[in-house]
Image (cartoon, rainbow, N blue to C red; front, top):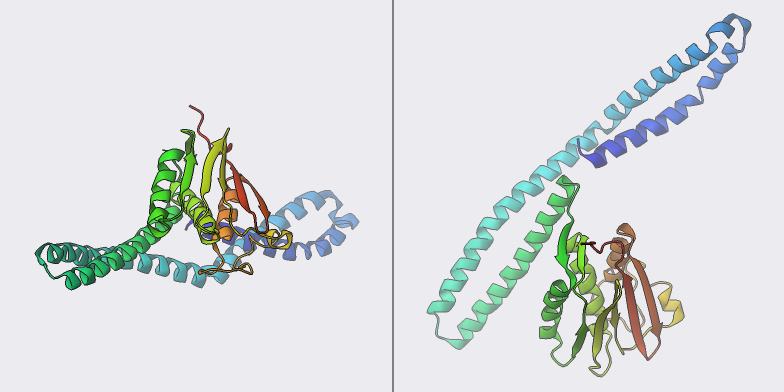
Length: 284
């Protein structure tokens, strides 16, 4: 039984216990009678223990189908993920071989599109694999350097936005947190800065003490928008491609890891996002 399942079980046990505890008032009134006076405390304790045991086993009975279905789904997901890796590897290997043998330019472009699609599928595979590992392991944090991670993230988006210059001034901070999820957070913030940029203005990414700051000169936001940007599925008036879940992911990660996030923005002038990384900086 996983930790989450145990929490759900004990929550149900506690709720049933509270409900049935109301019935103990009847026993309490009986205990006030002289005939039960000498055994009042013992009777109440025994009664509570019986109610707790009854609540626990009742919860197991009520949630047994849920636990069974949940475990079957996890097994199916793990088995599917394992099987998915094999055809992906075959497609990738054969595509590379065909590219080496092919001379026709049009066919090479087609093979390259197949290769890119395969890469995207493999990223999804890695994401699912990561979530499974996170479910089965309590500790997914690791030590890494901020400057190296930022370099990798920036390189991804420089291909999509070649006309935008991203200025960097990053201290060599060593962090200890969930690296994969942190990279998603940074990626979402950088992508938003690029998407809502204006006239290909530069974007600045720099550190000050233990703070990471990402600043742009884009379209900015009004005060009313600032109140809603962390709401899931919210998209501003000048919405771009996407579903409006990026910043909700950022906020969820920051809250979980006690990273204070501050956003300053002026309509028509740009946005400045400050992440206080003090809680995840590794002290050497």
